[in-house]
Length: 270
Image (cartoon, rainbow, N blue to C red):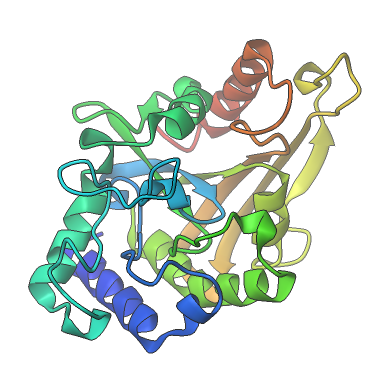
């Protein structure tokens, strides 16, 4: 994926944000779009979530993260009053904060646990010299309220707005393996691909709470997202546990999921 392609995608997302639809659906009006966490151009593995957390832009009491502690750009950091004022130089800055995310002020409390899931692939978000990984979202806009608090209609419309960007990013990148983080992501992503693209299987070694919560794996290959063709087939792997928030996710369960992901992706990442 060329930097020019990424810049174009960021510019497209800025235009969508400027048109107002994401804000009407709950997006933070002053927060920049997030095309990626890390660089898809140098990543063969990517994880997929729902949308950027509001904690990428504000602290625990809701105060905006200001320079030099900000993780992404905002209207304030770009010295603009609205998104129509953000010219190419601003778009370049937005992309650079995405590209360098894991080497600035990453939200480690969220990403460190997910990085452990990728360990057996040999890829890491935090690698500059080894195999890099990146994170993508179904929706590239942070919302003021948590995803689960948004009306279902707003969620569906935000995914509709974000799906084309996700498809273009995947198509133009070198990503070979896409890892879906949690049952909600699996469900929403499944709506964007050909029916029955993902096969599920119960994984006894992933069970939580003394077996009361099943572990379920998902695997499949896709060649389009949201009816937009990709340049190649992509291996999709998923698990039902939300690693960051599922109650009782154990170190052993995480290790078992990581081993499974490493085994399934081994032939794809050579």
